[in-house]
Amino acid sequence: MTAVSSDFIYMREYWTGDSRDGCLVNGDGYHYYRMSREGFIFEAYECYETEDGREVASPLPEMRNVDWLKDLGFDDMEALDSVEESDFLRIRSLTETMPKAKA
Image (cartoon, rainbow, N blue to C red; front, side, top):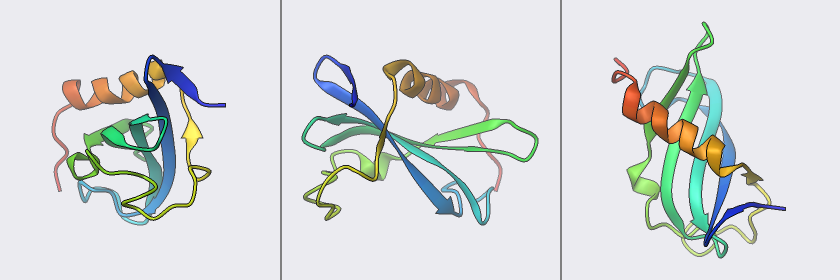
């Protein structure tokens, strides 16, 4: 079951590797998406936790207007976990309130 608010679903994808901001190497985190039910991505963020427990989030503008199925080649959306809209909004708010990460 997916978390729904009006015409949008809110999903996250687990990732491993280096963070987009370059501050986390060989780590892991999540990409958060606001999407259509058909897989079109309207908004995306990356989030990871530092060793001291602080959450770091950054926008993923390159994922805006990307279709999960058509553009990324997935057959379905099973790689994604549903999240509540409030979780997505909390991650978005981190990008609005935190200082920019230093590389």
